[in-house]
Length: 391
Image (cartoon, rainbow, N blue to C red; front, top):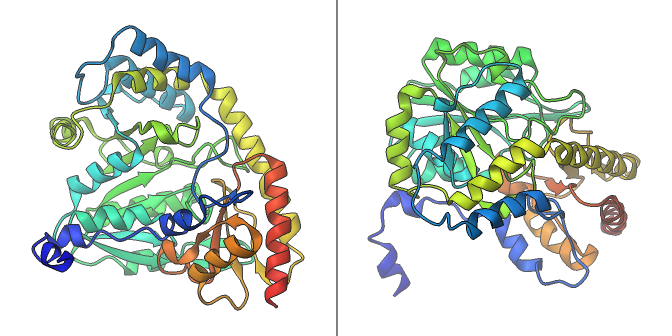
């Protein structure tokens, strides 16, 4: 009976991949005492000043339809925030508010890629890149990064070799989920040059740009691009301000795309709730201190993990320069999907299997360390014990 329903569905819908993270999450989410380090969020609730802004909006009755592109005060606040962060001038007409970063990514993909098209994605990568491309009918062309003593590295020659006549865009996530790889300014310039030479778009996911451990912020395509470059930025409130459940983000794109983007928002969400947008304004205008606290905690926790793992012969790990994940390898682990289930059973720690992140992820696990340090230290202790027991 089920197959008779499925046989007439669109192939783009059927191509939507299952999440290798969610299945592990579902397996262990009810375990007592489990340390949940599998998804990309911390353990802190959204700050009170952000929640109060949303509450005030609701109390004032802001419950009606609104601008598809976002209320003007939020677009202005985002533009001011970006201008301050990147020491440049970003105008509000480049900003389009979305229902989370995933919505922004879907719109960006819909703008540039469809059936028969290819988009290049350095991997291991956030699986939602592949998912967004699949449901649009496009194909992901993986460029596998390499892991060594200096961590994860992208060979730009491999990126260039992946370009074909069907390539429409590069999808570049830096700092990266799950690896923490962070492109240098020189690497970003080289990728932009490649895109210019081949007439490609760049979909830039710089969501973790303020989670940089070697500089106040990570290098950005903004540092090397011109106003006429084909670059779109996917962004979210989720990570910086602990707003994962709010589902609010934005797409930044050339103003010439404005009406097309507004049309795509109209036919996908019809706009973002005003109360969430008021919360976003509060985050942007008063949330710098919270970001600093989050980043400082992440730096400490990264170092706790590296201290615990660095002397273990069965663990391959290098300190990531950005984001808040450790993507580490286990010697002899050929099936990290099964290993993720086993670690729930034997260590009571939830991790995401590397197989969920595409080519190059085999043999690795992702650990999100944006939690209180005591939890991260306890997780490291449990994991070391469980990995030693495998030998």
